[in-house]
Amino acid sequence: MAGERILVVDDELAICELVSEALKRQGFRVETASDGDTALEKAETTLPDLILLDLMLPRLDGWEVCRRLKNQPSTKRIPIMMLTARRDEREVIAGLEIGADDYLKKPFSLGELIARVKALLRRTLPEQALEKGVEVGPLKVDFTREEVFLSGTLLSLSPTEYRLLEILARHPGRMVSRDELLAKVWGYVVGDTRTVDVHVFRLRRKIEPDPESPKLLHTVRGRGFRLDWEENSHEDPAR
Image (cartoon, rainbow, N blue to C red; front, side):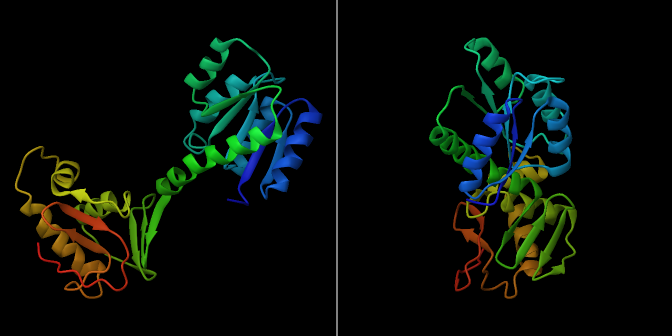
């Protein structure tokens, strides 16, 4: 984990510099802001991977900055760790309730700060990535544009085929049951799961070089299906 961009927001210059240097030594790219207005502007333009946000700021306080960022589609997924010198637990809870992901009380050690930053990034970066799309072997699913590419070639999928693939792609490597697919794609709580099998068969014909020996869309016999790249797979694709 290195190279992620972090926005440090604090009106105390010494803290900004100290934290920035510590983060840079860990390989992070760092931007700084000393007031709420500048923090909003930088967050909206640079879209950092994480924000360290002091609560007591000039112009706009940290609570308001957090509230605005969490209410905007472009910034609501950015994890925010609040930094506070206050001891009133109610204020910390208020920050968490408006969307902050973690908090750290001042004074703090740089070691603890770095550990908490890395832990928060580990929790949130996979979620951010999956909001946009996922790549499984030669298959790329773009959730934003609802497009699917195989080895760089745009595929033509029906809306049902795309929805089926999207659900599997949002859980790469995990088995998704026939009942779950039936409920999420067709809206049936109870129904004939052979509908799922038929569409999986059709989908395989579009995404697999050899549908008889699938390397992407695998059957978990008697249970469901799994999207995972297995280059040397010799699975029986029987439905």
